[in-house]
Length: 467
Image (cartoon, rainbow, N blue to C red; front, side, top):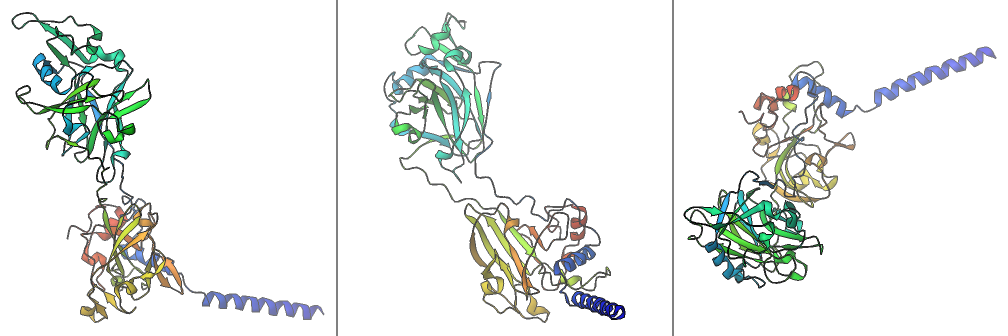
């Protein structure tokens, strides 16, 4: 009985071992592992641990305007305004009445200004008002997406810091005997002959639009130079272009802001045009401005379909497998997903985009699966065709162009082409000026710096531009 039992165990062991061997021999090979091993043989070493394959800087472009600043001159009073100046301004800003310059009852500044100087020259407010400017990028935003930058806070307490008043004595002599609250009485206190004021220098992107606001801390309301930002379109103050004879050195504007929604301008500021490219006010139309089309940042994705021969001995016989033209896809992220242009398909395996079978590259080009498109395959004895690039859009959320899925159908399954940091890549991001290799032309033959780029992570942005 024991002999029979031992014999049975031996048979089971043999069968189990044989079955195990048969399973290992028949199990399909992993094309990703084969590809990685051959890729490293192709570049002649390990991939640099910092290598991101061009995807490191391809995240969605910022759509919020950022970067506007204000610098306050605290050392001196940098500009002077005389009584004649104010007599002219009074014609357009009569106290307690609406600004007479109807063209600029609601306005913003634009026209490629990069910086400008602004001075507070009059205030009749009795609240702890905050004064500042707002800005936005009209290419991607409307004024409802504005950012605000504070210039003055608690104006009633700090008014004497911003300007000084003086009276003419005789000759070139001036005497200064103004009181802190003179800042609330300038238009009616006719003994004042001039003021000298401090300056705010506003700097920002030349493409931005900007305007001004006053925030009334007593009521909690904010009033903007753009009347359509105000509650029930209440009074915004106004703006007046100062004649050259009152300011012969350069063009300037006086603009008023209301802090209570009533006609009149409780706060007046003067702005001198000194920015590069000009600085001009533009009336804001009643209709809210439509954002301009979003400027797109395009990248080109080049990829290999994992269908490479084994180079585990480190040889170079099959280097031509790595031509990185199995799919050439231009992509740009948008607010709703991505815009795409399929440029070439040098694969004879199925390749699809974003997990969509209808976006298989041969289907998009309208050719059979064995036809290579726009890779000059026909010149090298293979089945090829020339086709116009195919444009299409993707809908979805893509934090980076790296997240646009590209898959190849191999070993009876869809396998994603990837670009892991510090490891072999089956897809690479380059600029749209990149010229992809023709069929069976090795990438490093066309661009000899590619192995150095892969292993040393140098010339990250332009390794393909040197040749």
